[in-house]
Length: 102
Image (tube, rainbow, N blue to C red):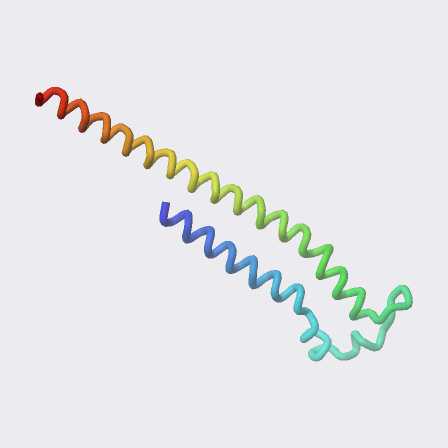
């Protein structure tokens, strides 16, 4: 179960990093200043690029994150159910042993 929690934490960190890079895209305009000289649909090209990356790329990224996160949550739930069943079985066996001893 601990391994599943580690996977979930790693997934959250990777998703945070990806979202941070995609939403804070402005350093790209310092690396490639010629982008700011063009226009698309009457707007500066870097505005359109920010909207496209910020929305159209992040939506599928969030979808993938949600799917992977749900898979890990199911794994955690299954292992929790298994651990609870083992505890119940151990408690039942201990009660049976006490009953037989008396």
